[in-house]
Image 1 (cartoon, rainbow, N blue to C red):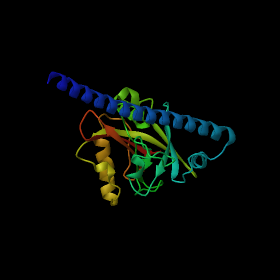
Image 2: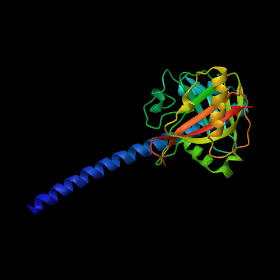
Image 3: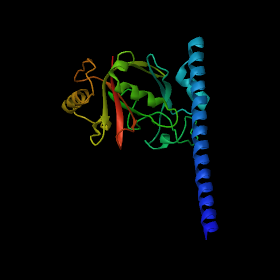
Image 4: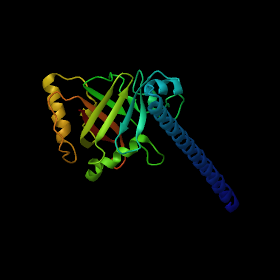
Length: 234
């Protein structure tokens, strides 16, 4: 009986070890692919500067994907990432820029948006285990970090848009940040709501018709919550 118990325990341990190895290798593979993609982003950015070529067209060519519509970057950080737009908000949660399957997904524009809408939403994964672009957004919980990293640039095929961050907050049950359809009066109130819910005062004023960019990623310190960074076009 004792030998049988030992045998069962051994089998269980082997199964647990196998599962751990599979998860570890999957995480390492995702992290390696993300690292390789970051190198490609840097190479394309360098090529764009040297040859004055259109960076979005270069991304589309490199990844064979015309759904790449923009590049997002934040000043004084290493965040430079292509932005895709699919036909829903599901596909790019677990697909890379080349449309291959991967749990790290891609950073993507809400499918309901056009890039020149007065309010646009961009989503990206966060992780406690592997590198993701939007993990950097957690730094904005520290007000000191904000002051040297509050400018966002969004490049498209035809334009370059500049934004200034004015609100950082944690969304739990009130997911008002995902709304995009407003009357003029509702929109003005929405902007004030976003600013007033910031965890600290950024000192950036907004107007009733300010055009804004909303970045969303998961936040792990509170269950089922999101870290929201909101910037206005300047």
